[in-house]
Image (cartoon, rainbow over all chains, first blue to last red):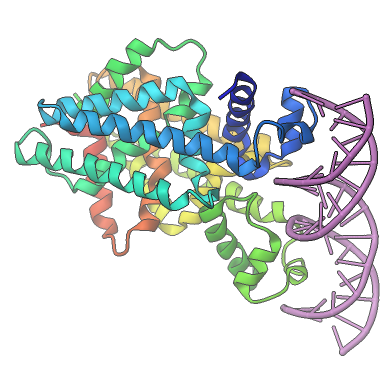
Length: 187
Length: 187
DNA sequence: GTCTATATAGTGATAGAC
DNA sequence: GTCTATCACTATATAGAC
């Protein structure tokens, strides 16, 4: 992908994050880049094309990370820590793409089913790791769906919080967030 | 508010939750109610009117609940538990309104500043309760913004999860979710 | 309270000049 | 690679009949 196309997609990601895919027009995007809307089509084929690139590329990165972590021979709690850190890394890399993944995937047409399959597989793998942790007495036997939901909703919202803060030390996030989510709030 | 208007607003909330405020047209809403778009304007004055009612009414319920909990003379951890339960109660009452509050508030025009003030006050009160808990050694002294963000992002996403599930026992949620968020995942 | 008809403005996207 | 001009369509909202 050439650098002009990358610039368009990154700018779109930032606008989508702020106002949502549907509320951002091709004219808004062109304005933000200092060109006319018609010129965008020399680089991308449609508005949905942009969304597809953002959502599918990011989802594939999640899938790849999960497959690698799943295969490692380490305790469940260490796997969960690595999954959390993967979410943090991808959020820091492109917060706007994370927002599109979480908020705008329903506006995909062609690749919607492919995305939903990846997301389902990801959640199933995560659930299996949690179940192994419960079986080995590493993890509290709460309702497993509540546990999974709670973890994922914090991780999926990270982009909101990260984009709002000015100078966050990523190394601190990578240690404190797993600690908080795994050990809880109360002493 | 008469019952026809309530029906329109509840139907809109469900559509907004599924596809987002901007992607739902007045024709979509009218179709879902079995009438023509023009007929909607006999009950509401604009599309934004619907969003305003959903977001502002819900935000005011949060404000009211927080003010009451804040004034109680109980340990910080009990206050946090009550806040969590208030989120659960409002989510169960109207998941679509919770979605609008979290995802579509930026499309408010007239009442945007009023909403943002309420949200800021809410977060400040929550932060103060957490700080008191840390001072009294009830709560782990993690970065307080990370702790607050983690709690709020789970609570704000509850509507997604709740709407997906079929028959959840609310009484179970009201006990398990505070337990999980306060005590953590690891044994 | 709902309808048909319509005003007005914007939408994504294309054609073709430079 | 960007522009102007434009197309076909859709958006919110109003007027006025029934």
